[in-house]
Length: 285
Length: 285
Image (cartoon, rainbow over all chains, first blue to last red; front, side, top):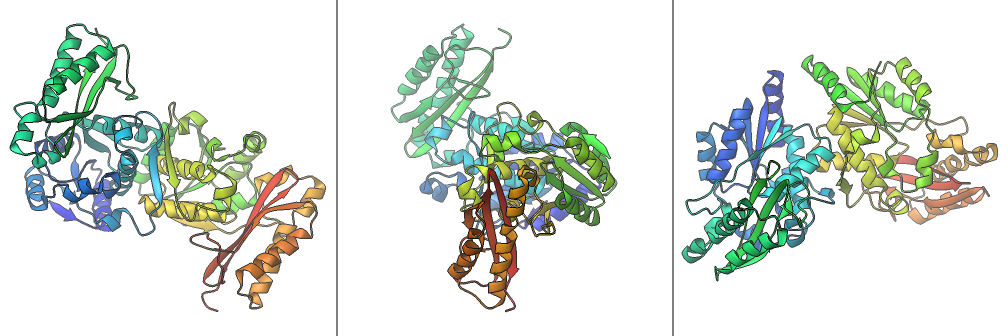
């Protein structure tokens, strides 16, 4: 595995692969890698000839300075894990290589699916995400890019961005990987104390309960929101920010449940903010 | 010359050229072509193996609905002129091919050089320009793109955008082409009545007077602004919007004239708004 910090060195590597007709898949990450990330790398490996993984803790998508400060960083272990998965290039740029001096250009999805939920609770977050994704797509020019379904609204924002700006890249989603008790793997889970870690399983219990209600025939959005809220309320350490039922394309709340929907949650456990979701496709029933 | 309306057909053509190792230059235009545009096409022809010219009257960069409505359209003549210049592909997309249904993603330079002047007098203009330029760059993936110096602030905004978003394209400027009396060629000149057309030469007279003052040693920004204003005031049909002395990178007004500067003008002649500028490099004196 090559580890490259300079965009120019990356560009030379990519030009050589393209001249050989090799396809490239990109997995953009912020490091502190876990099994969820590695499953995305394997998906990239299956889909393209070459795999580039970027690790860049993108300052512009952190709306809270403390969250950026404490975001876990495990560069050595990340490198070992990626090499073991057959990653071809680890792209590890400095902030200045992504945002040059005087940087003033932003990419913004100014409508659904970027409004509401994360867009509302983390002002500027999706602008930072859209901008860094565009920059990485320009630097890597991947045929395929893999994004995790754990960040469901981000995935929808990236799809909208790609369509709206005519970016020649195919977006592949990767399923959420969960711990045994259902907790979605996340780099931020390391912040949880043992008691908080036990409490954190309430997110998945709430999602499972809501799915159960829908599978039993419930089609009223507010009743399913009630199921989510009641289940989250059973855990004293959990402070929900939102627990919603939204359309899978627009991420707008739905009244009547039909088609493709997402149940997105954001919950604080102590000082740690966790998100999770379930995607349900009700088009055939 | 191939005329293509569909991005997918364009992509196939470009993929074939790239497989043959041919370089591509893009000349983005809004049609109603004149000698200024054709000089850009020749510059593209000299710089790359293949030349793509786009004609797209971009609705999002018109801040005034009437300006968009009356913007001149001469598609047949444009095609003949481009074919005669050895253009390889004329890309002629419909609005829906550039902005898909539900389009909500914008590219914006939120700082210098997009503030002030055109940024102030035409709200939203540069957001529309930056967005369509990004979309065209994604669709064409040119090695080189040619932009006219007549739109000097636009050229600076495009350079900033390319640097900030890491777009792998080289920007080539093309000198302003002028009529015999100095009027910069512009698609909007056709709107001028004969009397207005005669009056329009005042823009170049003002620029030439300001250049003369600077060449004679004047280094005070306000005195040069005074030269521009006084010369423009000699023409009763001319209503100046701005007449400035700015830094060539930031497009911010300068007090002391030094380095690379631009003298940008925007002047209404009747209902027609004309812009022009001179670029001066004082780094060696």
